[in-house]
Amino acid sequence: MQGTLFIISAPSGAGKSSLIAALLKRFNLDDRLRLSVSHTTRAPRPGEIDHVSYHFVGEEEFKAQIDRGAFYEYAKVFDHYYGTSREIVESWLNEGKDVLLDIDWQGARQIRAQCSAVRSVFILPPSLEELRRRLIARGQDSEEIIAARMQKACAESSHYGEYDYVIVNDNFDESVLALHSIVLCQRLGVLRQESELRALYESLSAGREPA
Image (cartoon, rainbow, N blue to C red; front, side, top):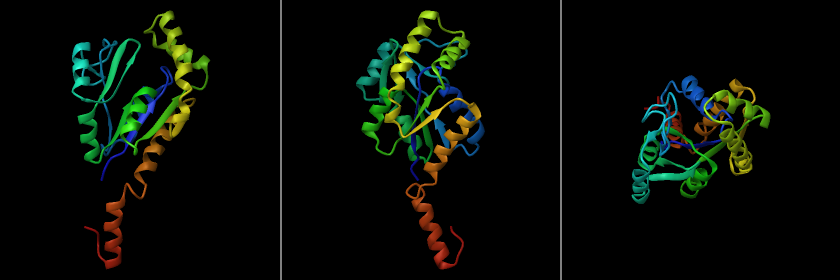
């Protein structure tokens, strides 16, 4: 059974990373859901761990991997490169794992051009005022960077119509449940379960237990 590739995008400060972390913690007891760890050329932020938060690499190494076709998608954001490993994602999907990609709208377009079966979710903040409050609460960026992120958030939000689902992250717990529901919806599709359903039907028709 082939896994499903999920794209999760949002403007900075919408709560995307927190939602993904909560989804994995609360609803991944069977280990069927994996989060792809991106490569990036930016420096680690406080608390980030190499190969866990990101694969931190130099710009020359990143560009060499681009030339080798190693990335499923890549983009340059705020003067730094971000990319998704093609080999890792495809190996997980072939194992029947569902894979989450935490990428922006540019990367989402690249993925859609290569994979028609992808499902995409866009996370929006409830308001610009709340978005600014969340960015300030991080305590990581200067006023200039926050202003740039706010401006970029407005531009990014205009792409919500390109996605299959939109979640307005006003109530965090409800948003986590909504994201989990999207994953479950894909798992319950007939095509996704085709081989298992065929075996079940054949066993029911024969009056025996499925293998």
